[in-house]
Image (cartoon, rainbow, N blue to C red; front, side, top):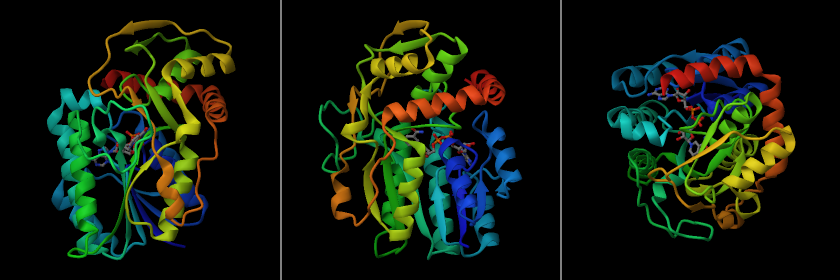
Length: 333
Ligand SMILES: NC(=O)c1ccc[n+]([C@@H]2O[C@H](COP(=O)([O-])OP(=O)(O)OC[C@H]3O[C@@H](n4cnc5c(N)ncnc54)[C@H](O)[C@@H]3O)[C@@H](O)[C@H]2O)c1
């Protein structure tokens, strides 16, 4: 049994990771301040399943250092806590900076001081590439050029993880620049988590707005595939920075996403249209070519059609919790 810290453990990806780690028999310490509306539902489920939840705001330096000191050495830290909405990064720039840049600095510095042998993985984002005008998969040849406050605060955090991984500081750090992740336990709303938001809106008969022409292309990665990658990267001790998504085989535009959802649910969408939002890349597909030299066997396994079906089935079976989480989240926007 390993001792593992998951920050943002009550969010979408963090809760899926924590669930998997618990079912694999590991001791899981989840750190989350439950700032993301809806996260209390995952908190209750995970605490019942045996996760120790520490309700700490990671942008509080003293509390974060004290918490890691009290935990002592752990085997791995998966740092997923973040302010995740681009829209909020414009309306509340200070919080975006604190929750992404300051909190991540506090986490990596805490690892250095109190558990320097731990494997340290950071969930970065394709938004650090900025407003790319490309129509082919993006690998590491593209420079960091973030656009949007969210892109900047996530890039700053990622760079700290990279710097702490250099020989002068010497941690074992890895960052994944994640594309669109989707799946169960994602309480998507308009400002973040578009596939889940479209699926929930379709099943619940809610109106949605398409920003831009709906031709924006994304490579979708089903959340359980991402968790497989996290665990294999940890086991292999993979370090460095890599783009991660579903890759070219799992790339669709927004309109195709709507079609797939309607085809499975049998329900039409109630659509309106609006201008493209700032920072909305017209095309992003991760170049997964780095896998060939990584020594990892991982490849995305759940295709988009299967993933969308699984997500819709989960939403249908969890109507009550989604209604409750969504009303909290919509009230917070
Ligand atoms: N979901 C995606 O498609 C996607 C894509 C690219 C990158 N990412 C990154 O993956 C990570 C997880 O994303 P998610 O979709 O699960 O988001 P989420 O909002 O569902 O989860 C984030 C969690 O972090 C917690 N949190 C936020 N600030 C905190 C703080 N200061 N202290 C403690 N806890 C805090 C929130 O309460 C929430 O439970 C984030 O770092 C995000 O930037 C996600």
